[in-house]
Length: 152
Image (cartoon, rainbow, N blue to C red):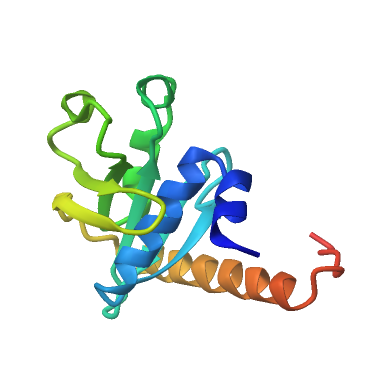
């Protein structure tokens, strides 16, 4: 499928997530989209680093999208670092200073401000790495066998 056709099918936040995921590979992180760390929460991008570090990136495509997000602080206990990913036109002064900032588009991204580190406890890290692995494996299986229906 040509890239411009794919872009027309994806929502603005999904395009940001794609650019973020591409850029994170350059930092030796792998990522998954729309992972559920706990009931009632769904992160846009979760990234796993080479030393087991876990980053959560929330993609916001507009001021209204950011202002309607009431759950983001609940994500902090599920990662080592938290970031916002926004496009270059986003009013970044709205974003809390004590969070990371990534400027992204559909093709790439740049970390502007590193989110502060708050290391996960070992037990929670183990749970999150397992969730990440299962989520990634399920996505890979569905990609290989699109007609397969998950029993979950």
